[in-house]
Length: 496
Image (tube, rainbow, N blue to C red; front, side, top):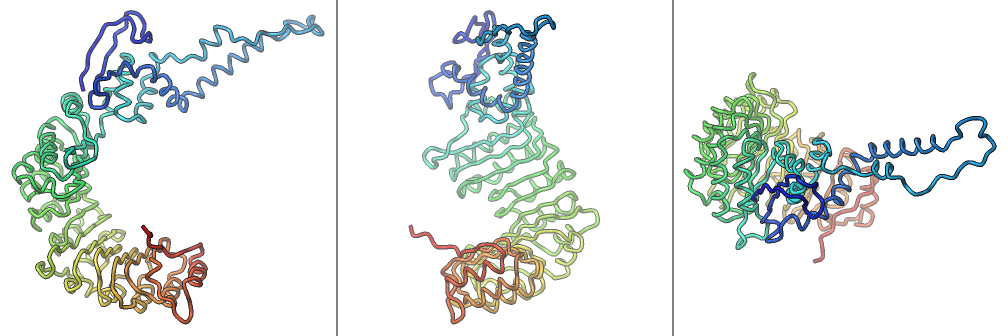
């Protein structure tokens, strides 16, 4: 993106004589066609955007004008009564026309800024070439506080990418305005390297939210750890006010987390760092020990420890609102999972009674043994792979705080008893999803009857329900709808 300052008498006949025109060339969206060729469409676009915010003002002016016209046509005195009133011309006067016109160049900054906030970046760039006022608004800090850098390689992704010229202009002119920044990269190493190059240049930033998002693996994990950590610590050191960080699937390590804590411990409220293999339990414990304002935390199960839960339960720490735990195994039988003491869970719930504890399981059936043997205050459970009948029985016995349960697969063993137990013990359950499982129609109706109208979400595949002597698939629709208090149908597998 490049800027030129031109002294010109007119641009397509729209600018006043002797005016100064700031021309913004947006190569990544125009190609060789300049913005001037698009100038004629801007009054129409701006009128549509402006109509919602300025129609009241224009309406008042037009209403006042009609009142003035009516006053002029009223009889001047009682002597004129009975005389035929003079007809007024239906053609608008020059004053009326002027009152209805919008002086685009002299719109208030706040009005233009409000409109610009609803426009995509490309359209704002077009608009900035109209006049000096619009160009000045284009560079106002309020429009550059949020930006998402999209870094994709044409050979590996069909997604669009932020043009390099625009990136350089942002770093040069708006780096100190950026507050909410995210990087969306594809699976290529080149895109991850480009993200690191930008991070390393944000030395004068005051970023509050930072997100590194990989649309496909491995991306950042392909980089050397030293290269990535060096770029990331530039932001950690210079921002001083980071409150939200999402760095999943990255080679962040313990020393870089110490830098984060040293510079942002008073402001950090959210940290998401699942699938970060270079971080140890001691590294995440350092964050919990010093960031007393931390409210949301997402991590892998191997980083979870009794010490971490006790640190999050200290008197100095604010109430934790959301704890997400990913329990993942890539190779069956090669990962050993530890157990968490019931006393540690209890301490966390006593300190943060409203905390949501979310667990995502991607395990093989033989790896579930350490989980839910004692009472666990988990609120949301998602099984991405097949789970055993025994495991679901434990959930019914030891998860009294359960709010949502999603089971993608179970096998050919009916889950009648397990569902009934869950309905009996999990009094807060409001959402249930069942995929490749089997449940008799009678047991399912009994489950819904016990839960009642508190089930706000009920997603059950039609193949899950097994007809029995009491209900068939047609009858179950009416029975379930009766107990839910709303119309309900089972989900159907798409035929394509």
